[in-house]
Image (spheres, rainbow, N blue to C red):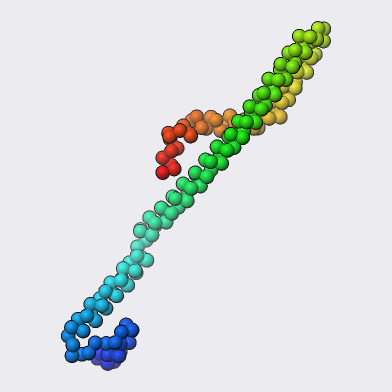
Length: 161
């Protein structure tokens, strides 16, 4: 196929005018430009076909997302533990106050002291029973924090980096 048949002499295909057939420097420049364009095209195709590199890139993205979710979950759990600890402290204080009030009643009750002590014990048991779930959750969170070493710079700290 001649240059006229391929469209090279009219500049079709590259968007630039074709070099004159007589000028060897212009032909060499055109060849070099075509090689560079072809090299860029081949590199783009190789990047699309390189499954291993694309998988590594996707794994890095997923890892970053997981670390972000872990960080957010840890912060949420810390807030919940704080809230549950406050609830447990309030429950313990109410139980202490109830026990103190009941012991004063028992000491001053005389003959009916046994019944008053039973009622006081039942009230304390009812209070503890009513707040059993928050107390259990706070205890579980505290045990988990102790076992994992969190929030110290121990076992879980390397997950955030």
